[in-house]
Image (cartoon, rainbow, N blue to C red; front, side, top):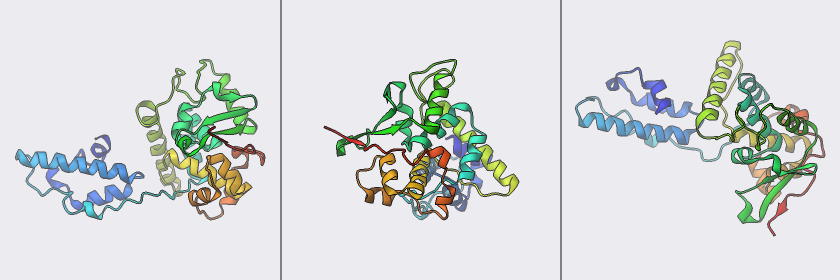
Length: 271
């Protein structure tokens, strides 16, 4: 595994210590992934021990039970973290983060969005995750920065059918390949700069941007605006989803989220 190799690859396998495993788990932004990676390391250690290549105890033994995963993410992406990553992003990553925030999308909704989804002065986002619950789509007025974003995509030398694409006009793949690599590098560089200038930074995931957008909308325009943007069926669902954050209202990106009329249209249900 690439991440394991980055952290432990330079070490003799017999020097690995259990406390390092827990530190690795706690440092990862995705603890689910971290636990899978450490299970792989455990298999690798057992393989090495069976062949006489490792004499020390398996460093993951008895430590995995201390790795409790919080299934509910409650991270709020601060503006400063968001801006740092944007600063160090390639155009593809920058477009992905920007469009995801503007539309309060799930990652897959961003990757699937096409120019053909534009219906007059609205962008129609298909909600595949909730269509079985009766909510098939959300409609976003194309105004403000969303309009500027779409216009900039239309003006690119290489036109794509997708509203977010790579340098060759191809659909981005969120969890593999170029996007995953470039998003990681952008966060790495943001972390280095944050450490250099002495400011806080937390490695957020792409899916955390949707929660930021919903939280900013709720703080600025109310829970109903956030519900429509997120494509939720009830306000209670939105209240449970948005982040509790100090001074979030003061930090809301008015120019990025749009005007008070954004998401003024009701999301449409399956007929």
